[in-house]
Image (cartoon, rainbow, N blue to C red):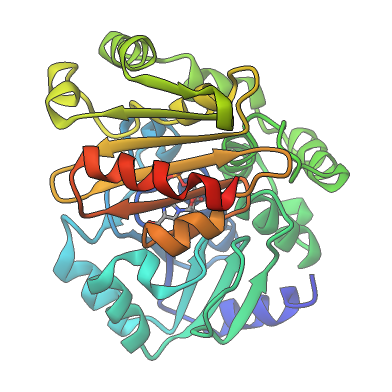
Length: 331
Ligand code: 5GP
Ligand code: MN
């Protein structure tokens, strides 16, 4: 990683360091933020993590009491931190808009030096140093690579490495997607050699479910799954009323779209969840079927070839109809 020494130089020159990541935090955004922040702390520097919205409950364990300030609940504090920062890390996103309009504007207005570490395609030009590697499976892998490339492998330990392992495991569907490379496994081996307790990451993330969450997921699969056999597409959806009925909290439907994609003969899956203001959409695909362009062209979104997302401002029914109508163009 060519940029590693430049980034280390920026860290050592800076006093007010802020780590940011995208809206709707996931294992990779939370994990890479905590891993990088703890690494920066191990260099004797102070750093704060500011995200647009709160961490989902199923990932809270990884914070281990540490604070991630969210803009939604700490608007003024985060506004001040961004304005006064001299170095801002932009992790796991490729454009200021992924912070949401308001926090995105604050990022663009900030006078701090900005460093992007990201694996999404087509990054916008809003940073001073960009590590942008779309072929890499996760931002957590890039942060691990940065720590190694900067000559600080000896700093790695369970505290820094467990969140990085979390990012790796969640963004790769537990090391199964094509984006996993031999380098991914080499870096995972490095994390384990450095004391990362990988089994605890799996247990804490995947084997600690609320009963309501499991019931909601079972209900959605039993009642809200539509299979379009002739085109190899599966659609799942859920209304607000249903989410409320099952006492939904953020993260409860995480990964359900992959269950739809796992059906035999299915090469693309979409999940539509009715939110307070918009319909939030997740797309997944495999083989020669890609979903990023569909998400960008029709649903104000984007993402990776095989995992993308977006939103719709129409009703749930209209949104699903709109999706069905563009299927022949893309698959
Ligand atoms: P998920 O389905 O897990 O929410 O998102 C999968 C991927 O799609 C994310 O990693 C991100 O790259 C992309 N994505 C999700 N939602 C959006 C969105 O609203 N806008 C854009 N540009 N990308 C999104
Ligand atoms: Mn990611």
